[in-house]
Amino acid sequence: MSQVTEQNIEKDKTRKDFEAVIIAKAWKDEAYKQELLSNPKAVIEREFGVELPAELQVNIKVEDPNNLYFVLPTKPDFSNVELTDEQLEAAAGGGASAVFSILSAATIFIHFH
Figure 1 (cartoon, rainbow, N blue to C red):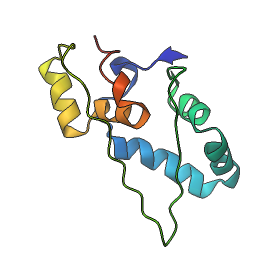
Figure 2 (tube, helix red, strand yellow; figure 1 turned 90 degrees about the vertical axis):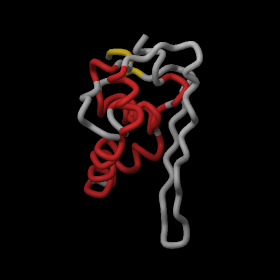
Figure 3 (cartoon, rainbow, N blue to C red; figure 1 turned 180 degrees about the vertical axis):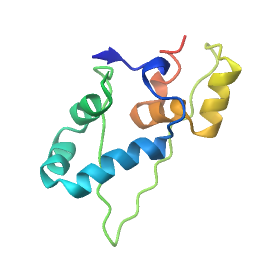
Figure 4 (tube, rainbow, N blue to C red; figure 1 turned 45 degrees about the vertical axis):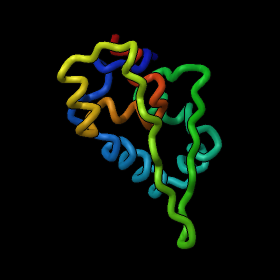
C-alpha cells in the first residue's frame, strides 16, 4: 500500500464522491457495512489503496431519523507549509485535498510537501 499522497488520489474527485462509494456499498452489502462499522480505517485503506498514518483514527456514525450529523473538518495549519496554487484551489473547492480532511486535516498537506 502507498502512503496517502496527492498523486494516488484522483484530482477531480471530491469528498462527496468518496463518501458516495462507501455509502453505496454499505447500503448494498450488510457484511461490508458491518466491517465498515467495526474497522473503518482498514476498509478505507483497502477501498482506496492507501495506507493511513498509524495514529489516525477513523470514526463512522450512523444517522437515524432522530439524529443528523454534520462534520466540521479541522482547519488546516498552513503556517509551515508552502502550497501551490493548484493545491490551494483543490482545498478551497473540495477537490482531492478535501478527501484528506475525511481522514485527518492535520495530515492533508504534509504529504504534498
